[in-house]
Image (tube, rainbow, N blue to C red; front, side):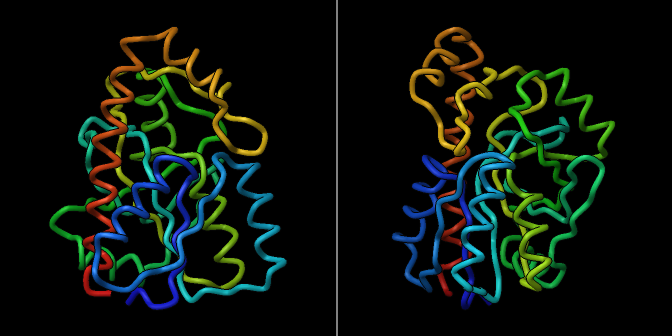
Length: 224
């Protein structure tokens, strides 16, 4: 099922969690690529990647995401049916999605994703976005990846873990994301220090989400 699959994961802690999970699995070892955070940096990255003339049979986007609905909590594993950006919708590959769902069905929910060009940090905006976009979760990369690989005729879907809920604020870390899609240490630290309660909540949720992400990748690749 996972032969010739490339996994795309946002750089940093998410990428490291996926790699840890794969090292502990005894099955097939796919190619894992560390991608930049955000729409524009990922678009540029994929354009450069295309020039290498590589064409995997399947692509799986993994990482963390934020909840836009109360029924989806921190630590929940979600599998996208489709993803929206500025009212455009990109469908995930149905066959590939169904294969992953059958393997993880007891620990995964099918959801509608939303991609944003900035961090959605306030609880009020999360709930509002959930209603206006008819989406369940939000991230900053999935739509771009779906659009790119579907145009190439490559089967692609998205599997993520929720790291922040829709009932609490998290720090606004948008200023910490540089133009190349990497996290800048000082703005990140300042964003966390200036909002200590929200920062504690985000860190706790992220650590929980990363542990679940690590286990999810093990479940997928334990038998190849």
